[in-house]
Amino acid sequence: RVFKLLLLLVIGALVGILVARDPGYVLVVYGERALETGLWVALVILVLSYVLLRGALFVIGRVRRGPQALLRWQSERRRGRTLGLMQEGLDDLVQGDWREARGHFERAAGKRSGPLPWLGAALAARLGEDPAAEARLIEQAARQDADAAIFAQGRLQVDNGDWAAATTLLRPLAERTPPHAEALWLCARAAVGAGDHAAFAALLPALRQVRPRGDSAIEALHAESERADLTHLSGAALETRWQSLPRHFRERADLVGDYVRRVAREHPERAETAILDALAQHWATGLVIALGEIPVADPARTLKRVEGWLGKHPEEPALFLTLGRLAARA
Image: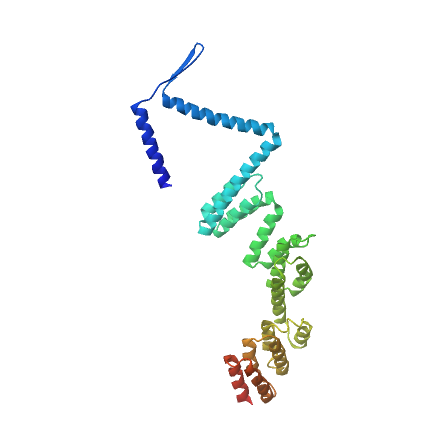
């Protein structure tokens, strides 16, 4: 930019020198009329005439194609300007300049720009810790697209951990046909956060059908819900619930670890069986250590079985720790 500015200054200075040295003379005669002017003024008039002529021809061409073409051209220009301002707003967000980002997004917003610029401005207001402005901007987004604004508010409540408010906002979107995929996911996330396993179970079939985040994410959320539900059970209810879980869940180290911690003291044989079944499928250091902490009835028998794992895991510290504990107990 500095180089271009210097270049323009040099060109301007050269033109100024030429004008001062000799302004020139132009005479145009047509009939009884004559126009006298300097050379440089004539050149400026020629350039301006050329620009005006090109502009007039462009407009005439658009009009000849019909009103729709002109409206489409205006729409494209408006859309290009909106996208440019939104890009600048995103750049400001990346740089952490919330005030500038909000200004660009608000300038990008218009009658036909949709809710995105308003939601971008609301995000900038939220990052700038201005809740009043955020609420006002989300309200503006709602006038453009009520669903988008509702979703944005629901997402905000999920981020804030207000599970009940999030569910109230997002449930109508999640229960549509077809459902709003991301709203469905957030409703499930809110159900898990609130510890409402029944609500999550009701949403699970739709989640598996829509697959808003992929199968692995759904399974992870499902496991989190099951894990939270197990913490509220004990005794026979816990055992019944554990046995009713799908087999792949009873082989997950996190779920097995929670179950073992709940039953190891009163039912060490159940805890030992759960750990051995899980380790037969997937090696998990935490479960190996937990096995050495269980007061098993026959530590010598368990010790002999665990020694058989040394062939596959000859340098596993957790395995030696558990072997030592079992040997001491035996």
